[in-house]
Image (cartoon, one colour):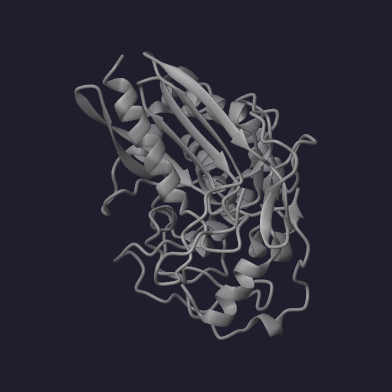
Length: 357
């Protein structure tokens, strides 16, 4: 592995993940690809791989937690009548701002700030936008949804997700706060990404700087969630981030959600379908992102979610299609390849493969 190349204008060219696993399961074909390294070090400014990436490596799911943990737990709680999608969040969390429903938060229409350093100031400001009007992707909304799950289930979030999601679906390598095995992908070099967010005000301006917090990690992040709100403010357990898993477990999860009608002992199929349906904003369902995938002579809708560290999952309801991508894209000096670009490459590869099958 090498340091980022530089173009004629001196701009750094995005560097790909140190390691990457791609896995695809369809009724017509399937494959698993694994390359690169799960951990690295730097020698004279050059990225050098150490332990190899493996299919059973544990990955920091980052925002994939939003669907595997929080959204799926809510499918179960709504099915059991313990949560109402159109109830005000204040019905579960009396300290929440008024006028925001559970549905609003799942659609990222709660009007909340996109991001706020809860480890500096635990109480975020009032909504930044008018609730229910527009989509503004918000980690804070899923922090609140994690609390809703706790209240409705009567359990701490990690235990609630275990009882509602991971244990019933047989996801034995999926858990909060720490990986379930020894082979773990390095999530980040340290906390530099979040420090830069504060100091640059990009992409979200907040009234703080990195000097306002003294607990930054200065060493490689391995076996801890990279997200600083999840790690520093929530002990690794949050509705928006904190879950670790493996590619085989994620394939199992996607297969179960694809065959959701076969799991009617866990949830009501009509509730799952409501979560899967398109929302008022393009590409967004209740919790899940929606992606178009050209497959043979048709276009199908993939439901899933990306994670900042480099993982993405996807499934197609009723079609026995499961897709997983897992990498460690933040291990670079220059700009990392966007997670969405890695995902687009996988969707394109599936389209091309389907033409030959």
